[in-house]
Structure formats: C-alpha cells, structure tokens
Length: 255
Image 1 (cartoon, rainbow, N blue to C red):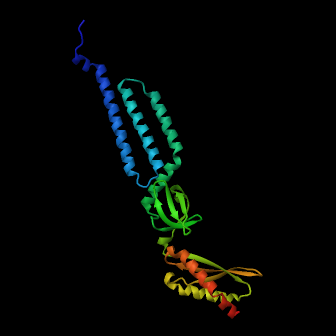
Image 2 (image 1 turned 180 degrees about the horizontal axis):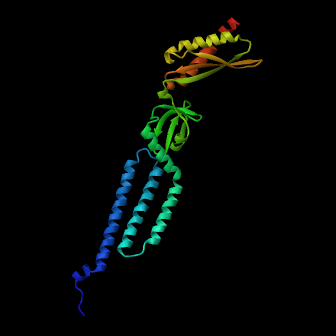
Image 3 (image 1 turned 180 degrees about the vertical axis):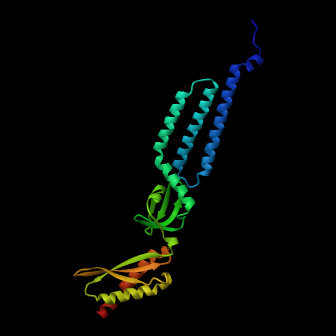
C-alpha cells in the first residue's frame, strides 16, 4: 500500500474543500468588517442605536450567506437553511416595518424638497423651525424652545405647511379688555399698533381686528397680521400686547 505524499494530501478533494471553506470564511469576515465601516461612515446624523442595529442585522445576513456558500461547497443540503433564512428575513421586515417606512419617507422628502433644515413649518398642532432631519425623524424647535420629534412617515400622512416658502405667516394676537371700554376705540388702537409694524407685514395685507367674545365683564378681541418673517412671530405678539396694555390709560380717556 502506497503511502500518500504531502503533494497528494494537499491536492486531495478534502484538502481542496477545506481550503475553499477557509477562504470563504475569511472573505465573509472581511466583507462584514468592510460593511460595518461603510455603515458607520455613511450614518451621518442617524441615531447611534439605529446604526448599531443596521450593522448587526447586516452582519448576520452576510455571515448566513457565507455559511450557505460553505455548506454548498461541502455538498450539504441547504433547503432547510434557506427556509429558515427566508422566515428570519420576513420576521426582521415585520419587526422593523415602521423604521423602514420612516426611511422611505425620508428619501421621498429629500427628493421632493418639501422643506429643508432652517425653514419654518406647521404640522398638526405643532409649529416651529426645522433643526434636524435624519433617516428616521425630523426635529422641530417651537417658539417655546421645545423640541418636537416627528417621525418622517407622519410627514407624508399629514399636511405640512411650509411657512418660509409661503411668503407670509398669519399671526393672531389676542387681547382682553374690560367691557366698559368702547370697542371702536379698542379696535382703533389695535389697528394703529398694527400699522406701526408695517415693515414686518405683507404690503397688500393690512391689519384686521375681530371681536371674538363679549361678556358682561370682558371683551375679547384678536388683531390679525400677516408677517413676512415667521421667525418674528413670538416677538411681534409680545410687542403688540405690551404696547396695547401700555395704552390702556388712553382708552380710559376716550371712553
């Protein structure tokens, strides 16, 4: 019986299969490392938790693919493994369906540019300046310095008003006075205050006053302005109300 030489061992089917397995696993390892680096660099402002999840899920998928290739090289039946892989992929899609929807919505927003960071938008009951937008969510800074986090998918389901591009913002400034005052005088003073702010108003939209409620003790009115710069909304409201209540003694003189 001939003793196999080293050459015979290295060129045997077993040795070749073993070498193929080692090379496949090494390539799989390198692809996983490269994938994780690419995801980390491309993440940008994506939340770190989501980045870690994407890295983990992608790494698992690559390793499973590598193992399937190894099993095929070893002539092992992989039908059951493919079925498990399919079911696992379906489970991942179901578990991350909301995140995937938000990511798709982010791509839609980027494509059609309905708004950009720095612009003032209004959605549902929220109004503010867009300070950040990533693959999952959009952050809005309200005039009260509150951060509102809106999922990107919500931005596609709801009507979004871009105040920065509409050219103006309608501002309603409420005031309350004692019912003893003549409402005509109150309206006149409010209109005078509005005219003093004409540099901040849309030229063809003069100030208007509406009486919203009158009781035996108080009267509620609203001064309506169309301002050109949404960022000045809160400052204008404060200025008008401060000026108006400073003129209350003048209303006493006119009654």
